Length: 375
Ligand code: NDP
Ligand code: GDR
Image (tube, rainbow, N blue to C red; front, side, top):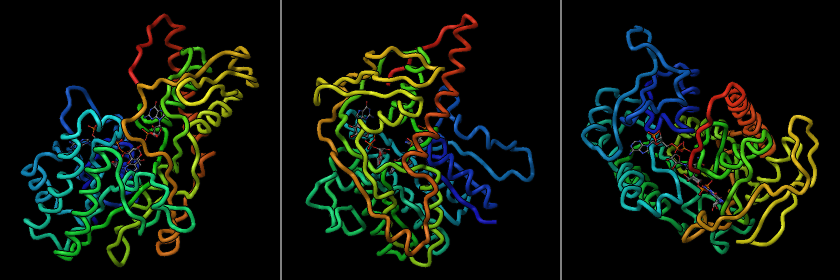
């Protein structure tokens, strides 16, 4: 039985990857952080009793800032594959905690690679590093002649997160070259799902649209509506992580859809999923969106109602304006075929959030309070 270790197993990607590897018959080890409350919501459905002799999912307490802990866990598990998905992954928050993000996202990668070397597992353990399109920074002059970022495009990170991840990228490549380790970077463009963290823009939008349609929230405040992202579905992207480690040669790979869309259009698409059409007025900081039609009898919103305002609090000190990736290499050499396009993704997220928010409506009807959460 193959053995995998996933850092960041409690996150969006970690949870989908754990599902995939269990389906493939792996023994899956995951590292979770100690928290004062349960933080395993995304993988609770995969829970297996530790007393079960056939247990194939095992969680270990740990942290990417703790070398001794990482080395011990790797020694215990003797993994065939490590997926390093653990990270402080929020770009805006990285401006507030730049040292922490450097430690976790940058040095954390080194700690894993060095543990493999210290334990003499260079020839056994394959390593996947969660690199990111944030490495490119969205500089127009760095796109290739077809207008995409690919494996050869130069990097120019625009946040402490991007800068920390560039260290992770290069140290992975360096250990591959220096010690002949099977260590690969997946340069993944944005990928989303119903399990996306609530403070990333897509999930913030789909949750808010569901709440607004159901009368649980008046409006949503967003930042830069002009930003363009290449959004795919996390389920398609974790499949590719696995494929990268099954390849004959250790390399770096771009995973993207090749289509880019503004935040504004994502908002439009999310509202359309529940039959609500919008009109945007103003530009940049004073922009607002109003309802122009509501074609869903379940959601009765007044025509002319304001449902969105721009709040500059959500602007970033340095922004990545546009990302679009070229996944040709992954498609041609590894045969990757994504199942979801952007419309499927928005539909999946909206259906899930409408279902979730309907539970809040039921709670309200039963006389309970709904708690507000910061976004
Ligand atoms: P999430 O934010 O959903 O999950 C991050 C995971 O990392 C969580 O399990 C979190 O634990 C864990 N983590 C955070 N800090 C530490 C730490 N100090 N030690 C150990 N674990 C830690 O991210 P995603 O699943 O979306 O992304 C997975 C990886 O891919 C990340 O490295 C991200 O930077 C990268 N990436 C993501 C993209 C995307 O669009 N989603 C695109 C490109 C790259 P906890 O649950 O306790 O917070
Ligand atoms: P990103 O994702 O920074 O691309 O990083 P995020 O969803 O946070 O932002 C995407 C774009 O939307 C704009 N935006 C807002 N963003 C947030 N979070 N909240 C808002 O209210 C808002 N309004 C507009 C942002 O300015 C930005 O341009 C994600 C993370 O998953 C990283 O870990 C990963 O490496 C990259 O994707 C690829």
